[in-house]
Length: 240
Ligand code: GLP
Image (cartoon, protein in one colour):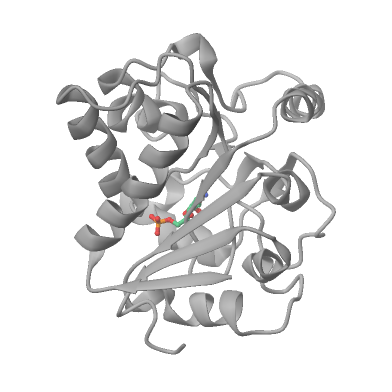
C-alpha cells in the first residue's frame, strides 16, 4: 500500500482531488466507486469547486456507491442517496441515471443485492474512494466479514451504530441494518484511494497498513490490492 501522510484534512482532500481529477481527465467515462461519511466531503467540495470553475466534467462518468441504510431512501435526509446528491451529484454535471446505489427500501433485499452485484459485474470501477470505520470496517463490512463477500445485508455493530449516531437526532434512529458492497466487490476496482483523518482512526489505520491481513480487520484486505493508496493526516497516521 502506498501511504501518503499530510498535515490535515484540507491537504488530504486536495491531494485526493488530484488523483480524482487525473482519473476523470484520462478517461472521460471513468467508473467511480464513491463513499459517504464525513471523510470524503472535502474531496467532493474540491470536485465541485473545480467543476464550477470550468474544470473536469462528469457528464460521461458512472458512479457506484458502496452502501445504504436499510429502510431509508431519498425521502430521508439521513440516507446515503440523499447525502450523495446533497454533497456532490447536484453540484456537478453527472447524470443521475448514471449514479447507482442500493435501494434501502427494496421490498426484496436478496433480489436487490443480486441486482447490484450484476451491475458491478458489468462495470469495473476505475477508481474506488474509501473511508474507514474506527473498528476497521470499509463500506459496511464489519469485522468478521468474509473476504469473498459480495453485496449483502449486514447487521451493524454497536460500535458503528454509536459512531454514526452523531449524524442522527438520537441513537434510536440509526438503522440497525444496511446494504453494502462486499469486500470482493471493492477489491475488483482497478485503483483504490483510502482517506482517513483524525486520531479516532489511528488504530484502524495501523491495522489496515501494518497489521495482519485478517477478516477481523476488514480494511487489512487492502494490503493485497495491487494499486491502493492511503492518504491520511498526521493524527490518523500517529501509530504507523
Ligand atoms: C460509515 C460508512 C463508511 C465510512 C465510515 C466512516 O460506516 N458506511 O463507508 O467509511 O462510516 O465514516 P466517517 O468518514 O464519517 O468517519
